Length: 206
Image 1 (cartoon, helix red, strand yellow):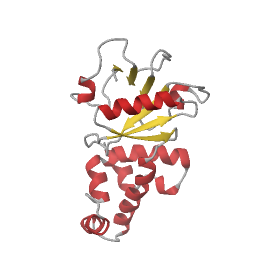
Image 2 (cartoon, rainbow, N blue to C red; image 1 turned 90 degrees about the horizontal axis):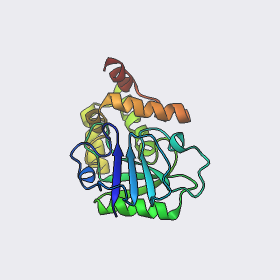
Image 3 (cartoon, helix red, strand yellow; image 1 turned 120 degrees about the horizontal axis):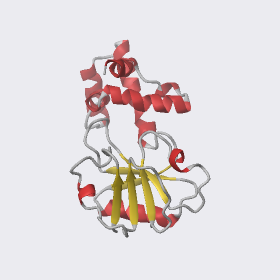
Image 4 (tube, rainbow, N blue to C red; image 1 turned 180 degrees about the vertical axis):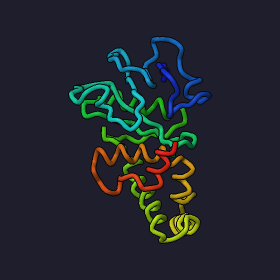
């Protein structure tokens, strides 16, 4: 399925050189329009219009009252500053058409990516699941429960993780971790989302 990309600045989902960028159509009649850092404008002629999201809600771009819309949000998962993964979280507002979701899913899958569908909530699926785990590990480290090496090894050997939670969040960048957790904490007020001390320090020293 042909897609065109309208881009302003760099994209977290598709950094420079990414094959998804290189394979985009250069014509205006592509079936799907992907917006990265570009102000939203409706286009009912497209099968789907996709808006790249950071931490924000899709509703910040399109409002909460869309009816039978072809507009969706998306974010390709990245662990901080690590390279993007193969997973795309597709954000479906309440009024999205099934046809738009199917078109977007088919486009991403044809590009070799895996797709999960989330409702329009801050943090979507992955961050809401994993950030409390990372925060807990960093707090346990501050409390002296165990060393970083021992906690990471426990998760790798005991739970089968490919890398430990502290190893992973530090590699991705503690300053970036602060900004993501802070957005969730401000939205939901849940203590497990509150940025841990090391992330706060990293954000202030950057």
